[in-house]
Amino acid sequence: MAKVELKGKWLECVQGDIARQDDMAAVVNAANAQLRTGGGVAGALHAAAGPGLAEECEPMAPIRPGEAVISGAHNLPNQYVIHCLGPVYGVDEPSDRLLADCYRNALELADSKGIESIAFPAISAGAFGFPLETAAAVAMNTVGRILPQLTNVERVRFVLFSAADEKVFSSHLPRS
Image (cartoon, rainbow, N blue to C red):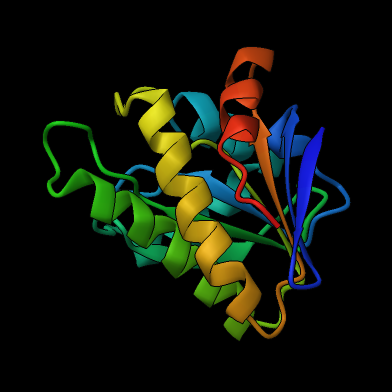
């Protein structure tokens, strides 16, 4: 695990399973526009949460790239799931700004709900084709800039599927 303190708040990177972050109040779903189960993060979270998650999300869909919405966590060990639709690389433009919007909107939504801890996956870096290095740089730059300004969010964790992905994200942690 790599972590950095930013004005009394913590930003960390770990390798792990986004559906098993029992010490985090919220987890972020790298959602599809219809907020349905799918592959990758969305599939893992929906499978662990149970059918109630899909039922709760149905009236909130569709969402647009960069948008974030919140639901309960159902059978997950968290209180909330924040669903973000990341951009499809090379299709949804400007992709860097839309990806940054995902992180900003999720953090601002969490803060407005009094959430103190939130775990993110590598949004858009899987099936949506965003290059991992660029995705990590956008994610860390955005979160590193916004986190110190938030009132309630105290801890942000990036949960990466592989050790290689965790190493890339850790290399982009901002300086404290």
